[in-house]
Length: 548
Image 1 (cartoon, rainbow, N blue to C red):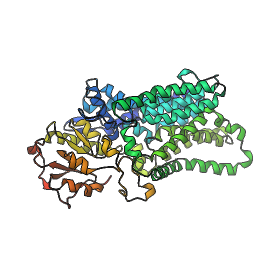
Image 2: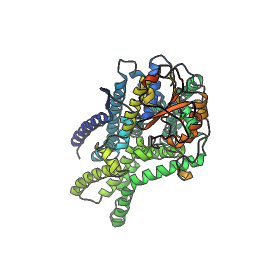
Image 3: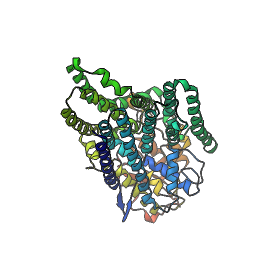
């Protein structure tokens, strides 16, 4: 492929991705009571509540007027969200602005992957890797649903590109670690990739390794160090609240076995066909493989650094136990940003195979390979996931978002502004409902986050039972002690734990897939607006909401 054709193909890719993103975003939206809502995934809406409060002078906290708790893990992204709330954008449309920013990040990432591929491999290889990146659904889904995955992917790809661009320089410029500095600001755990990038740079520029190490250290102190000091002064902790929620109170080894299981399942599924194809091809062409020429691409520092970042980010995902949503979205939020680097590596492997093919076969096979692997990579759970990737089905979590916005509207009509509401979906409903909230699962609750995790909740083997962010609750504290006026969305698996504190003190009624509990005699409840008859809470009360 010539340079001119490659650039035209890239422009076509960017146009198609814009069209794809527009359809995806439209499909995430919904109309309630005549108003169209754009909504992010619930975890992103937690950050949006923090952002709203910060922009409106209530401090960087989940509940205005209460002691601040760092229930988010994306400070820079949260600041971007906060900036949006400084403008007169309706709450129903603020998420759309975030989705547009995410799409710009995805477009930038496609261009960066193309630039790495065409420099390390060829023009055509750059287009193939960019095409695989453009239509990889887990990455598109996490980004367009508001998580910081989009800007993280840009930072990772830009770091790899810097390694390529400055590979022949005497030493890296002062701006070399800006992408990983932004990465640390986006997520505190970005420090892992920053340290790896610094060490990798020291191994490349050996004659100036001391200056390189010092430069990396300056960025580390300036970003991670300053944020840690701010956290300690403002929140009173050295680590975010989510660290205590997910990384304490559960056996570390079993946490990591769960992370290893999901990482292995993901990478085996993604890479096995390519590795098997290469093995079969190598066995067939043993005497005619131009190993020296074919492996030249993998001596490129860009691909080597890409492989290192893939391995490190996977190891980190294993260490933290993975994410809670692999069963729904395939690649989790830690691995999805580095999957485009895997695409670069796979295209490199394909080029080795293509060394023994004719020119005509190369062109035909390259197109077939790219299309076939794009379909396969998005079929991580068969036809159901492929239908989402093709936008034939609603995006993940849309049903949850619709229900939670409707729940917020209902509770707004049923309660006064001072009503205290306990909930386990801590993002969407609290964002659209300006009420003091209680986070039942502890993401924004300091006490719950520091308790021991419950065991055997999911009925899975011990090596898989860790469920990040969903194994801590204390209803004696959240319900019995704090006495919320309303309790809603109790997780059915924990219902028996809650009934001891709900019985005799609360009345309840089922609403859609949620059970709503109202504290008897609460003056903060507008009893005349309760839409259904109320029942006493007993041990036999049913919660119609399915287990998550």
